[in-house]
Length: 257
Image (tube, rainbow, N blue to C red; front, top):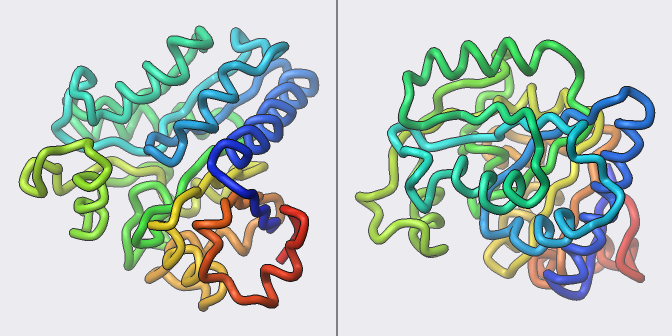
Protein backbone atom coordinates (compact mmCIF):
# COMPACT_ATOMS: atom_id res chain seq x y z
CA UNK A 1 0.00 0.00 0.00
CA UNK A 2 1.19 3.49 -0.84
CA UNK A 3 0.34 6.66 1.10
CA UNK A 4 0.49 10.01 -0.71
CA UNK A 5 0.10 13.39 1.00
CA UNK A 6 -0.62 16.71 -0.72
CA UNK A 7 -0.98 20.32 0.33
CA UNK A 8 -4.68 20.73 -0.40
CA UNK A 9 -7.80 19.15 -1.88
CA UNK A 10 -7.16 20.55 -5.36
CA UNK A 11 -3.64 19.19 -5.74
CA UNK A 12 -4.76 15.88 -4.22
CA UNK A 13 -7.65 15.61 -6.68
CA UNK A 14 -5.49 16.48 -9.67
CA UNK A 15 -2.80 13.96 -8.75
CA UNK A 16 -5.32 11.19 -8.07
CA UNK A 17 -7.06 11.94 -11.37
CA UNK A 18 -3.78 11.71 -13.30
CA UNK A 19 -3.09 8.37 -11.61
CA UNK A 20 -6.61 7.11 -12.28
CA UNK A 21 -6.54 8.23 -15.91
CA UNK A 22 -3.27 6.40 -16.51
CA UNK A 23 -4.73 3.23 -14.99
CA UNK A 24 -7.85 3.46 -17.15
CA UNK A 25 -5.82 4.02 -20.31
CA UNK A 26 -3.55 1.09 -19.48
CA UNK A 27 -6.50 -1.24 -18.87
CA UNK A 28 -8.05 -0.26 -22.20
CA UNK A 29 -4.75 -0.79 -24.01
CA UNK A 30 -4.23 -4.21 -22.42
CA UNK A 31 -7.78 -5.55 -22.25
CA UNK A 32 -9.85 -3.46 -24.67
CA UNK A 33 -11.97 -2.18 -21.78
CA UNK A 34 -11.57 -0.70 -18.30
CA UNK A 35 -13.85 -1.95 -15.53
CA UNK A 36 -13.92 0.65 -12.77
CA UNK A 37 -15.70 1.27 -9.44
CA UNK A 38 -16.95 4.77 -8.61
CA UNK A 39 -17.54 6.32 -5.19
CA UNK A 40 -20.05 9.04 -4.36
CA UNK A 41 -19.19 11.58 -1.67
CA UNK A 42 -18.18 15.19 -1.15
CA UNK A 43 -14.59 13.94 -0.85
CA UNK A 44 -14.68 13.00 -4.54
CA UNK A 45 -15.63 16.43 -5.96
CA UNK A 46 -12.17 17.68 -6.98
CA UNK A 47 -11.01 14.25 -8.11
CA UNK A 48 -14.00 13.65 -10.39
CA UNK A 49 -13.83 17.17 -11.81
CA UNK A 50 -10.18 16.61 -12.73
CA UNK A 51 -10.74 13.07 -14.01
CA UNK A 52 -13.63 13.99 -16.29
CA UNK A 53 -11.58 16.91 -17.67
CA UNK A 54 -8.61 14.70 -18.51
CA UNK A 55 -8.08 14.31 -22.28
CA UNK A 56 -7.43 11.13 -24.23
CA UNK A 57 -9.53 8.68 -22.21
CA UNK A 58 -11.72 6.51 -24.41
CA UNK A 59 -14.74 6.51 -22.10
CA UNK A 60 -16.71 4.44 -24.62
CA UNK A 61 -14.59 1.49 -23.47
CA UNK A 62 -15.25 2.00 -19.76
CA UNK A 63 -17.67 -0.07 -17.67
CA UNK A 64 -18.75 1.47 -14.35
CA UNK A 65 -19.71 -0.31 -11.14
CA UNK A 66 -21.40 1.46 -8.28
CA UNK A 67 -19.86 1.22 -4.79
CA UNK A 68 -22.96 1.73 -2.62
CA UNK A 69 -26.45 3.22 -2.42
CA UNK A 70 -29.16 3.99 0.12
CA UNK A 71 -32.10 1.60 0.15
CA UNK A 72 -35.36 3.37 -0.59
CA UNK A 73 -33.89 6.45 -2.24
CA UNK A 74 -34.90 7.09 -5.88
CA UNK A 75 -32.29 8.12 -8.42
CA UNK A 76 -33.97 11.53 -8.65
CA UNK A 77 -33.19 12.33 -5.00
CA UNK A 78 -30.29 14.81 -4.69
CA UNK A 79 -28.58 12.56 -2.10
CA UNK A 80 -28.82 9.43 -4.28
CA UNK A 81 -25.41 8.07 -5.17
CA UNK A 82 -26.82 7.00 -8.54
CA UNK A 83 -27.70 10.66 -9.07
CA UNK A 84 -24.20 11.70 -7.96
CA UNK A 85 -22.41 9.39 -10.39
CA UNK A 86 -24.78 10.19 -13.23
CA UNK A 87 -24.28 13.93 -12.78
CA UNK A 88 -20.57 14.08 -11.96
CA UNK A 89 -19.16 11.18 -14.01
CA UNK A 90 -21.47 9.53 -16.52
CA UNK A 91 -23.08 12.65 -18.02
CA UNK A 92 -19.65 14.23 -18.50
CA UNK A 93 -18.02 11.21 -20.12
CA UNK A 94 -20.73 9.15 -21.80
CA UNK A 95 -19.71 5.89 -20.11
CA UNK A 96 -21.98 3.40 -21.91
CA UNK A 97 -22.28 0.57 -19.37
CA UNK A 98 -23.23 1.54 -15.80
CA UNK A 99 -24.29 -0.97 -13.18
CA UNK A 100 -26.24 1.36 -10.93
CA UNK A 101 -27.48 0.10 -7.57
CA UNK A 102 -31.00 1.50 -7.84
CA UNK A 103 -32.14 2.30 -4.32
CA UNK A 104 -35.85 2.36 -5.14
CA UNK A 105 -35.93 -1.18 -6.55
CA UNK A 106 -35.93 -4.57 -4.81
CA UNK A 107 -32.55 -4.78 -3.02
CA UNK A 108 -32.16 -8.53 -3.47
CA UNK A 109 -32.79 -8.30 -7.20
CA UNK A 110 -30.36 -5.38 -7.55
CA UNK A 111 -27.76 -7.38 -5.62
CA UNK A 112 -28.33 -10.48 -7.77
CA UNK A 113 -27.76 -8.51 -10.97
CA UNK A 114 -24.75 -6.63 -9.60
CA UNK A 115 -23.16 -9.82 -8.27
CA UNK A 116 -23.45 -11.51 -11.65
CA UNK A 117 -22.09 -8.51 -13.54
CA UNK A 118 -19.08 -7.90 -11.32
CA UNK A 119 -18.10 -11.58 -11.35
CA UNK A 120 -17.81 -11.61 -15.15
CA UNK A 121 -14.28 -10.18 -15.24
CA UNK A 122 -11.72 -8.46 -12.99
CA UNK A 123 -12.11 -4.88 -11.78
CA UNK A 124 -9.14 -2.87 -12.99
CA UNK A 125 -9.42 0.07 -10.58
CA UNK A 126 -11.68 1.02 -7.68
CA UNK A 127 -12.01 4.67 -6.72
CA UNK A 128 -13.10 4.80 -3.08
CA UNK A 129 -13.31 7.13 -0.09
CA UNK A 130 -12.99 6.61 3.66
CA UNK A 131 -15.74 7.72 6.04
CA UNK A 132 -15.41 9.68 9.25
CA UNK A 133 -16.00 6.39 11.07
CA UNK A 134 -13.39 4.63 8.92
CA UNK A 135 -15.95 2.94 6.70
CA UNK A 136 -14.99 1.51 3.32
CA UNK A 137 -17.91 1.76 0.93
CA UNK A 138 -20.88 1.61 3.33
CA UNK A 139 -19.25 -1.06 5.49
CA UNK A 140 -19.54 0.72 8.85
CA UNK A 141 -17.77 -0.65 11.95
CA UNK A 142 -17.82 -3.43 12.85
CA UNK A 143 -17.46 -4.30 9.17
CA UNK A 144 -17.91 -7.81 7.81
CA UNK A 145 -14.42 -8.89 6.73
CA UNK A 146 -15.53 -12.47 6.07
CA UNK A 147 -18.39 -12.46 3.56
CA UNK A 148 -17.51 -13.44 0.00
CA UNK A 149 -20.70 -11.95 -1.42
CA UNK A 150 -19.82 -9.08 -3.79
CA UNK A 151 -22.72 -6.86 -2.67
CA UNK A 152 -24.58 -6.96 0.64
CA UNK A 153 -27.28 -5.12 2.58
CA UNK A 154 -25.79 -3.16 5.49
CA UNK A 155 -27.13 -1.13 8.40
CA UNK A 156 -25.69 2.38 8.65
CA UNK A 157 -24.42 3.55 12.02
CA UNK A 158 -25.21 6.96 13.50
CA UNK A 159 -21.75 8.42 12.85
CA UNK A 160 -22.10 7.62 9.16
CA UNK A 161 -25.62 9.03 8.99
CA UNK A 162 -24.63 12.21 10.82
CA UNK A 163 -21.82 12.73 8.33
CA UNK A 164 -24.39 12.78 5.53
CA UNK A 165 -26.35 15.50 7.37
CA UNK A 166 -23.25 17.62 8.05
CA UNK A 167 -22.26 17.43 4.40
CA UNK A 168 -25.66 18.77 3.43
CA UNK A 169 -27.12 15.74 1.68
CA UNK A 170 -30.04 15.46 4.12
CA UNK A 171 -31.91 17.98 6.27
CA UNK A 172 -31.94 15.85 9.43
CA UNK A 173 -30.77 12.53 10.85
CA UNK A 174 -34.27 11.10 10.56
CA UNK A 175 -34.19 11.76 6.81
CA UNK A 176 -31.10 9.59 6.28
CA UNK A 177 -31.95 5.99 5.36
CA UNK A 178 -30.86 3.36 7.87
CA UNK A 179 -29.92 0.67 5.33
CA UNK A 180 -27.93 0.54 2.13
CA UNK A 181 -26.56 -1.78 -0.52
CA UNK A 182 -22.77 -1.86 -0.33
CA UNK A 183 -19.93 -3.53 -2.11
CA UNK A 184 -18.40 -5.89 0.45
CA UNK A 185 -14.91 -5.39 1.88
CA UNK A 186 -13.57 -8.50 0.17
CA UNK A 187 -15.00 -7.41 -3.17
CA UNK A 188 -13.33 -3.99 -2.88
CA UNK A 189 -10.02 -5.75 -2.21
CA UNK A 190 -10.42 -7.83 -5.39
CA UNK A 191 -9.79 -4.75 -7.53
CA UNK A 192 -6.42 -4.90 -9.23
CA UNK A 193 -5.75 -1.33 -8.12
CA UNK A 194 -7.41 0.86 -5.47
CA UNK A 195 -7.26 4.64 -5.21
CA UNK A 196 -8.68 6.08 -1.97
CA UNK A 197 -9.33 9.82 -2.16
CA UNK A 198 -9.60 11.22 1.37
CA UNK A 199 -9.25 15.00 1.90
CA UNK A 200 -10.30 17.20 4.80
CA UNK A 201 -9.78 17.64 8.55
CA UNK A 202 -12.92 15.71 9.42
CA UNK A 203 -11.19 12.56 8.15
CA UNK A 204 -8.01 12.93 10.23
CA UNK A 205 -9.14 10.73 13.13
CA UNK A 206 -10.24 7.93 10.81
CA UNK A 207 -6.97 8.12 8.86
CA UNK A 208 -4.97 7.87 12.07
CA UNK A 209 -6.99 4.88 13.29
CA UNK A 210 -6.95 3.09 9.93
CA UNK A 211 -3.26 3.53 9.12
CA UNK A 212 -1.57 3.66 12.52
CA UNK A 213 -3.87 1.40 14.52
CA UNK A 214 -4.58 -2.31 14.13
CA UNK A 215 -6.18 -3.76 11.01
CA UNK A 216 -9.65 -4.31 12.39
CA UNK A 217 -13.36 -4.42 11.46
CA UNK A 218 -13.71 -1.48 13.87
CA UNK A 219 -11.60 0.59 11.46
CA UNK A 220 -12.84 -0.91 8.19
CA UNK A 221 -10.56 0.96 5.77
CA UNK A 222 -7.54 -0.35 7.69
CA UNK A 223 -7.92 -3.44 5.53
CA UNK A 224 -6.52 -1.45 2.60
CA UNK A 225 -3.11 -2.03 4.19
CA UNK A 226 -3.40 -5.64 3.01
CA UNK A 227 -3.70 -4.63 -0.65
CA UNK A 228 -0.49 -4.68 -2.66
CA UNK A 229 -1.59 -1.99 -5.12
CA UNK A 230 -3.56 0.60 -3.13
CA UNK A 231 -2.74 4.32 -3.11
CA UNK A 232 -4.22 6.47 -0.35
CA UNK A 233 -4.45 10.13 -1.37
CA UNK A 234 -4.50 12.54 1.59
CA UNK A 235 -4.17 16.28 2.03
CA UNK A 236 -2.31 17.86 4.95
CA UNK A 237 -5.60 18.16 6.88
CA UNK A 238 -6.63 14.51 6.63
CA UNK A 239 -3.04 13.49 7.42
CA UNK A 240 -2.79 15.83 10.42
CA UNK A 241 -2.92 13.13 13.12
CA UNK A 242 -0.41 10.80 11.53
CA UNK A 243 2.79 10.39 13.51
CA UNK A 244 5.89 12.45 12.80
CA UNK A 245 7.64 9.26 11.77
CA UNK A 246 5.01 8.55 9.13
CA UNK A 247 5.00 12.15 7.92
CA UNK A 248 8.79 12.17 7.72
CA UNK A 249 8.67 9.06 5.57
CA UNK A 250 6.38 10.95 3.19
CA UNK A 251 8.19 14.28 2.89
CA UNK A 252 7.72 15.82 -0.54
CA UNK A 253 4.14 14.67 -0.87
CA UNK A 254 4.37 10.99 -1.56
CA UNK A 255 5.90 7.82 -0.20
CA UNK A 256 5.14 4.40 1.19
CA UNK A 257 4.10 2.77 4.44
